[in-house]
Amino acid sequence: MQGATVATASRLERFMKMVPTPQFKAPRKKNP
Picture 1 (cartoon, rainbow, N blue to C red):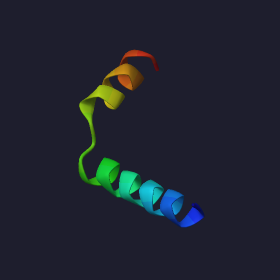
Picture 2: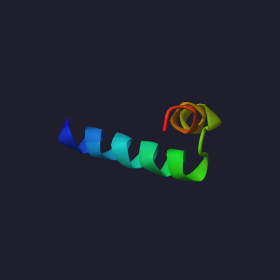
Picture 3: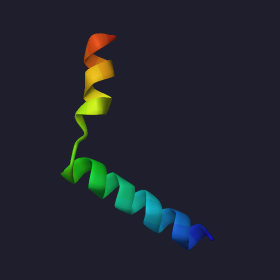
Picture 4: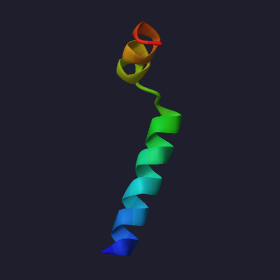
């Protein structure tokens, strides 16, 4: 189970870094 969790986290991190979603950046900029 730990292996799967680590793999998922790594994939999520790479996906977020490769394709940064504007939805997450929008609220952050609106609420400093």
